[in-house]
Image (tube, rainbow, N blue to C red):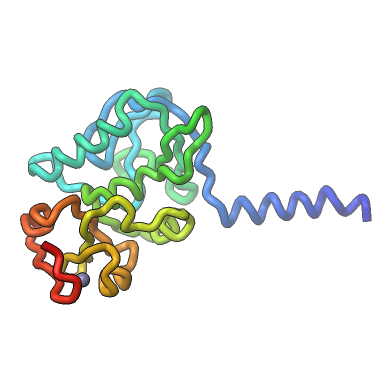
Length: 199
Ligand SMILES: [Zn+2]
């Protein structure tokens, strides 16, 4: 049996490689933010957040998204899980899931792709030609998707809710939008849920 052990270990390692993300494929400093979902990393080049989409920079929402990214990432170390299927998109940008740094290792609770969606500055767009599945960003975390949201809505409806509303809980993570205030929800065309009656 003893001689089987290295092979068994190898199988386990391979299986783990298939089912878990690899948040440490590259580590570098963010030296320029282009917009909310695109920035440059020292030593690598241009990075495009995988499977999320921010508004364009010629809109107020686009500039707000860029400011969010600047506030979290500019000048800081990030860890990158680089897409293993395509790698770079048609613009030469590395398709990545980005993690914040926690004392020299990737902080898997701080998945920036997820954070920018939770913040309301991006929506999920699940491109099937990369290795990533955005739904896992919420499933694999102990943090609930509504954490930190004053109110939530769905990209598929026009109602907004308290996060603990029974209807809010039915919103799939990939459709969830986070609002920091009722005025923000209203300004984006959402109306109060008649069940939970948010202000
Ligand atoms: Zn509700």
